[in-house]
Length: 632
Image (cartoon, rainbow, N blue to C red):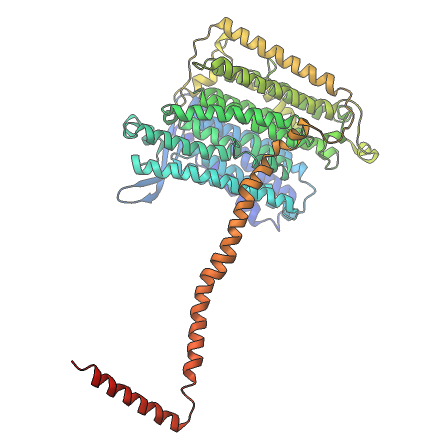
């Protein structure tokens, strides 16, 4: 046991080694070798993660201290990993789904030059390393190092095709908006150091440390941590970077949206559940921010025509569901939805990549249609993903989303209202996902004859990950079957040593009614999508309220007017007035004054003896006057 857990440090080190080898050898390694190294290190990390998971399932955990990272007289920070039930579950998600995305990438990115191909895989390995560091860290500082690492890697991968200016802007947007959230995280860490004197999880979350914190401290720290989570996990108001992240290669979108970066905020709050459970105001804010995000993103997704943009706003909306669960104290449900979402969202992103690959780079669903006949594996697996995210009974999303809905209904005071609005967002999910499926895979093909001629199923390196993820999207939810359906919620039992499980007092009959209502309404939503889009004809741009949704509620334009343009004008004022005329003017003025004074004094050195005699007489006269009139 100790041997396996003591080797856990190899899990993040292996992807780091892959990053170094592929990065340094990018000019000499061929694509086959790059693929073997890039995928092999993630597979090895996954195998180790499975072994670690089996140990933690048996109740074995470890806090591994490797060396002192920061050592001061009043503060000591160790570089340490915490391997327990929560971190080991995320290790499985990151390495398992990450490996499938790496395998998929070997075919999807095959057209790249050898050097760029190796660079891509090195970035991908570094991304996985950073996320593993984030979830394995035994304190907030190690978590923050990984937190910043995934931010850097998102910048590198979103802007991978950096010659395209729009892609570079999208990468900048992701990086800058994440920095806003990261500042909140960092301030919370400083606050903890000031009040508790430690950032170690076991110390901070102990009863003795929590007793040192006042209600104001707890509210302030948790709100700042939540600000950090809104950046990474794309909640209002810091969500607009995520749809733009579609600029990167499709496998990158799958990795960011399903298995790694966006789940960081969920993990951080779940890890800090002992602290957040004491902050009632913060929990309420988290609930309503999550609810607003789920609704806003779902409404936008209804009118998007870019296949990846629909999935991007779907991710933002699903993250909103996870925050609703966190805000209602239902941490297990949030982690459960992270697990199931990783399966079906990775599946649909990779499925969209398969479609884009077959369409020669086309992403507008209005120019697709009838693809089921040409791409049966992609179509069927994508359909499974749609069924899972819609919450159809038997699929993984049903169990996790139902648990979130039941938790919302159980909230004291406004539970039924919260449940109704959350359910409405879930119905929107079913509608826009099946709108996407019906427009893309059913009906007649609406693209060009050349595109239709080249339509084909993707190679096995792309379809096998789709099949594996489709199977997981079907069976993945059975780890959390509720007692009302005869299960024992194995995931809640597994996470119980780390994550508090909320106990609601609903009867089984009430749960059955809630499940039946949500299921019937989801089927009605799908049927409505079928009636509306089964014979879809390509349409132009939307009008009226549809135009508002198609333009994403003009949030980007609002941010541009309220924040970007005033900031640019203020920056121009600082540059042109304060910097150039003020600071530079002062510095340059001193130099000019010295030069001018030198030129004037130089005139005294004319070389004329008569002038020198005159000056000497004037000087003597001056001294005589001073001596005569200033005598005491």
